[in-house]
Amino acid sequence: MSLRRFILNRVLSIIPILFGVSVITFGLVHLTPGDPISQMVALNPEVTASQEAQLRARYGLDGPVWQQYLTWMGNVLTGDFGTVIRTNREVSAIVLARLPETIALGLFGWAFALLIAIPTGIYAAVNKDAFGDTVSRFIALSGISIPNFWLGLMLILVGALWLGWWPVLAPSRLPLYHPQMLWYLILPGLTIGTAAAASIMRVMRTSMTEEMNKEYVTAARAKGLPERQVVLKHVLRNSLISVVTLAATLTAGIVAGSVVVETVFNWPGLGREFIQAITAREVNLIMAITLFTGVFIILANLLADILYAVLDPRIRYD
Image 1 (cartoon, rainbow, N blue to C red):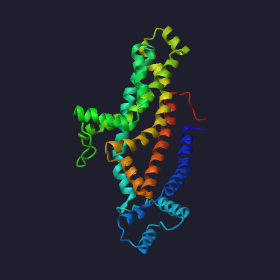
Image 2 (image 1 turned 180 degrees about the vertical axis):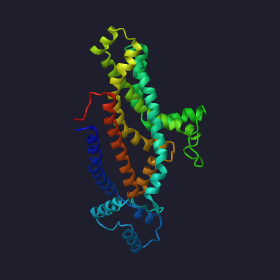
Image 3 (image 1 turned 90 degrees about the horizontal axis):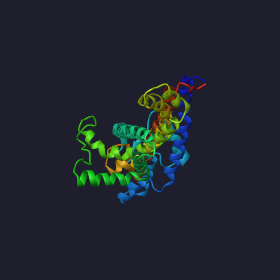
Image 4 (image 1 turned 45 degrees about the vertical axis):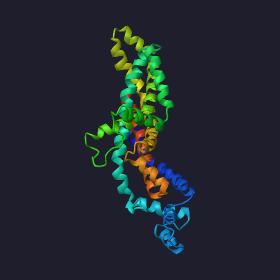
């Protein structure tokens, strides 16, 4: 099949995947004890049983789980993601308001990961088994092993409290596009991008080491091409295919890590909103954020498949 048809099939495959994700998520939320109504009643003991029943009927929480799911699905198909029961705010408005902050944090983390991982991976492959290669492998192993929440706390301790170089909490009065907000992105961006940078660096080094031992590299050197041109023009391009594959896979880690990082740094994104929604059992908001995350990960993998054909013309979808 052609690349265009392949993309169309992948886009259509989003529908059953998101359906499965929604069923599983909806079921898991309802397996946990409590719901928004029970929490509201717990905070206000004066609410009678009849008033509680009226609230459940008002928000469609009085029926069986399958009926609630069908009602929710029917509303979503019409573009209605429901409201947050505690605040009576539209779920779609909350997601759209928090989405830019999460995207900015994710892009900053990816930029940091790629800017660190690719040059370091190239250096480690060219200088295999040298001192710099050993140091880079140690740093990569450390970056993979350190949990996000611990790294974030250490960066706050050192960068904000001891050195006083970076602020921790972003001011709510500044819009996201304000240049000063870049300063507040540094610590959470470093935290969310460290594990990805370490993984990409290891794969970059391994892939380039394998490519540099192949016959076409020997032939290029025999023709008298400069080593810099051999590495950057020939070896690097073929090695990036493995990096693109890993980068698409790590998208899930970046998105999942944003939940922890946004909580640690009090970053006003979807991750922090997701934690608050789980605590309050706000199923409409949980479902909306989960579906957005699923679409984001699927599109990242689709982009990786398209980049395969761009990086290596030998790859075709037929």
